[in-house]
Image (cartoon, rainbow, N blue to C red; front, side, top):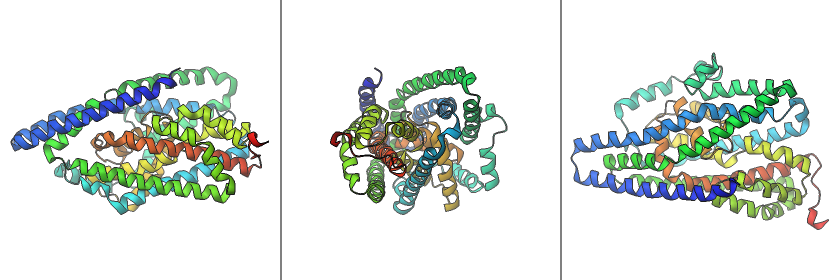
Length: 422
């Protein structure tokens, strides 16, 4: 019942975000054109607090969200040995596709430099030098410290997401190993994850207020140049999505051969629904039916597809590196290639904890920015354009999961003729 209300709620939220962006732009422009320099600085500093409130609300739910969803996801797999050959092949595909997606986003940002459109617009030069210095200090030793928690409660309190992922993996595997006795824990954490997801919905209702404060602050301080940035940011993102689709379709042709066009035709309806609602979960039942009609065995579909919804988010993965590195460029944060590759590996892990969450990519980008000492305020800057990016990345996620399920079926020799032609 709840799923049917998601598109209406999302479209209404998007409408409010667009309105708040326009109002924020108008208010900021008035201040920029008619107020003195001192008032501009004070106004920007104070109105920006609205964006800060929204960001802190998102940060508030990151830790419980990652822990509950990741533990439940792992525990529901059951005995990991039973996953066996099919699970291994699926994970090989997921990891390869995720790395390719992340690399596309990284290469695009370094090549096209979308953040340069706003460089200096929101920068606090004194603070940025300190931030850049901290980024340079990010070494292998510090990375190891970020991975291994000395206290799960400390990791939660400080939002050390990677440490929390490590603990959650151990906790999930141990829970699965115990078997029947752990079912109450799994059920309890499943309920916790549902509660946290409900909170995510509440928090997102504050998004228009955060957008208004952030846009008004930026425009009041730096003028209307931010909308030039939005145009280039969206264009460059679409180039990345196009490259990713060409790559996925090409690999599909290589493995599935002449059946790839038929697969794309069959999932066209789920793709359109996912695109218009920005909800890949909303098309899960329909996608399951279409893949089985395509010739994938039901036992493989029922295993691979849910797993893919957690581990195979190709469009979102590309966006995560694209957005994180763009924010770093906006704030003049120097990110050497070694640091960028470290970020890529971090995103490979942290992104697995928030699959299926509304605006999951933004949650991961926010956590990543915090870890790499990139100003989190940049996330509020890209929020107004995020819904339109989300439409394309959600459809790409659906394509990636349909392709993964079909390819693993082919590898297992379980891909039969379409059911409607038998």
